Amino acid sequence: MKLTIAVLGFLLLITYQVILGYDFNWYSYALGVYVILASSWVIAKEESK
Image (cartoon, rainbow, N blue to C red; front, top):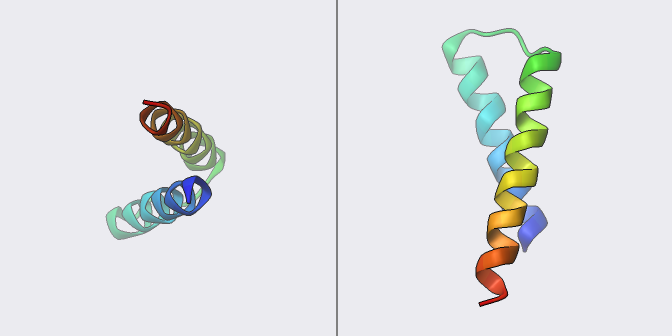
């Protein structure tokens, strides 16, 4: 479940980049990885309550 949400977030980020007309590059990829790690950490923290 956590992975699904993280992947959806990553795809959403890519879609956002494409809509705005940015080329997908290493910066976008790094930002996507950061978003996945951050969202996964938040989700894990919420589930542990």
